[in-house]
Image 1 (cartoon, rainbow, N blue to C red):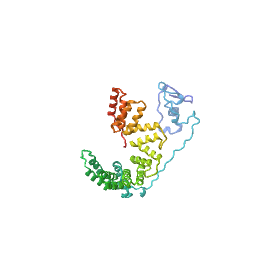
Image 2: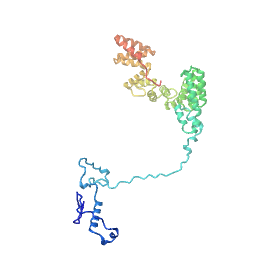
Image 3: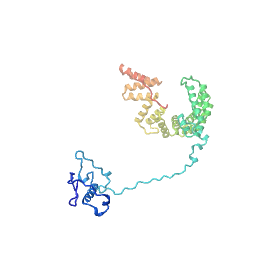
Image 4: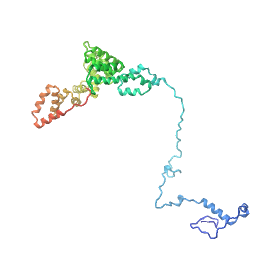
Length: 395
């Protein structure tokens, strides 16, 4: 209850009435200023004070919930600026306004896939794998139509390999394989051209084989370039300069066998000037790609200091790597290295593997070591050799 007896507003915690409540005078009387009674004044003050009264305690009144205190708001989310942080900036930069402008989309002939000539597109995609060819066919309808012959060639190529190797329940038939490869080559596939050249080469029809190799090489196929170069090197009148030219193109494209053959030409000065450092570089690139013969030659380069600085640890590493990938000479030499280091058991295993691969000298050293081992150790070494499998390689 609000008490206005002394002209001041006091807060009272108990509500009671000392006199009965009287009704105000009629509205006609209330319109005249002289008709205001003390009761109306008291009621007016009472209504005004009630409207101004706060229904929720302010901060100065303290927390009304003493059992469960309210958490204080974080200064970063407070509406009022914090006085405890005078270094806080008063003004923040306004966010950047991004204006979007509607512009009409114009067809740019330089970026329009459909404007690419079909013959150029077919030359570019002639060496594509099945996966890349499928992806290129999804670019646009024009590409899909232009690449249809190459997709048919991929199907023919798959059947040709089945006939050649007798896969997927198909009996080997070299004639049918050649027919499938020729149909695929007629549709522009360089992969089919290379396989057709291989079949002709195996049949002894080397001129036809070289012709297909050249077609694939001129379209930029690395396998066709490498095979054409090897055909030039193995010809009766070898064209070594032309061979090195094609080997360089194929090796630069990442063909592993071409890298190894180019290193051999540089090492022996065949078709080009002798360059040991360049030869060692191409040996190493082929070896890192998994070519076993290149691994063995890299070991020899490190061992004799040809093209690389002499390093016996590197030579040993690459020799073991070549041996683990099935190189018979590397197995023989690695077995000798283990024997010189006193690793008799391991030496017997590698020498046994080299002996089984046809290295005659390995069998003699193996027999000498076996005489120094117990029967248990000999049996264990033979079991290890029987269970050994070469690591996968690019050959």
